[in-house]
Image (cartoon, rainbow, N blue to C red; front, top):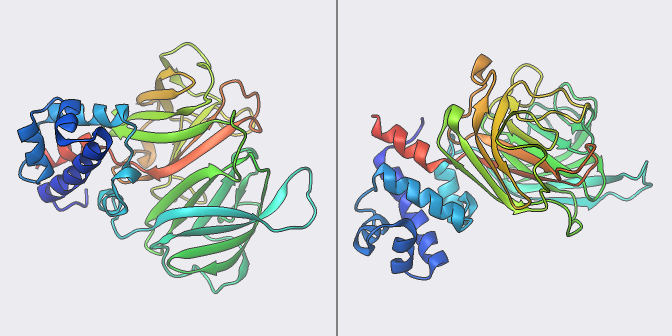
Length: 345
C-alpha cells in the first residue's frame, strides 16, 4: 500500500468527522451517531487520536446510514485515498448530440470528460482509432458495446486530449443507456466513471451512493439508490446475476481493458463473469454484497485499496441488456481496510 502512515489515517478521519458534524448538525449529535463521547469525538476531529477498530466499524455504519460517500468528503481526500494519489480523477462527463440521422434509434454523441491528471495524449490528436488509455462501453449494447480501446471493433475519434479535458466522437447510444468510462495516464494509473447518457425517466434505476468496507475477498459493498426492483432471486445468494456487474480497472491485461469483472451473468450476450459475488440482500432501495466467491484471486484478479471500479445495475425485472439501467464509477476506499493495514505495521 503506497501510503505515508498514521498521519494520513488521521487526516482522512478529520475530514470524515467534519462531514459527520455537517450531516448531524452538531458535534454532540455526530458523537452520538457513532456511539462515542463528545470529548473523544472532538479528539478525532482535531487529529489528536485515532479510534479503535470497534469505533471505526461504528463510523462506517453511521456513514452508511447517513448515505455519506467518498465524494462527500472532498476531492483532496479522494486523491489521498487512491492507490496512486497522483493519478487521474474524472470530475464530469457530458454527452452532446453530434447531430445527423438516427440509426436504429441510436444517436451519435460527442463526449467531453473533464477532470485532472489525464496525462499527455496517447498520440497526436486528432486521430481516429484505438488507444490503450481510454475505453467507453454502452451497457445496453452488450457483446459489441465497447469503444475506443485496443482490440475493440468500434473506433473513436480522439479530438482533444489534455491533462484536464478529453473530447471524443463516434460513440452511439440511446438517451436511457448507461455508460462506463475508464481511462489511464501514461503511467498506467486509472480512473472510472459511470452514468446515464441523458437524464432518465423517474422509474429508471438511480445509484445515489456506493460504500465499501473490509478488504479483499470479504470486501463489503452497499449500494443505495432507487428503482432496483424486487430481489431477482432468493437471498442470500452466491453466484452471478443478469442485473448486477462490478468491474475493476486497476490495470489492463493483454487486450482487455479490465483487470477482472465479478457477479454478472451477461443476459446471454456477454460471457458470464468467472468471479462470483456473495449477494446478501436486494431491495428496491439497497443492494448489499458480502464479498467475492469462486476463482477470486486467480491470475491477479484481486481488489486493492484505491482501485478504479465501475458498477452497473439493471432493474431486476429487465429481461435484456436494453432494459432499465444505471451505472456508477469511482474508487475503492474502504476505511476499515486502510486502518487495519496500518495497524499491522
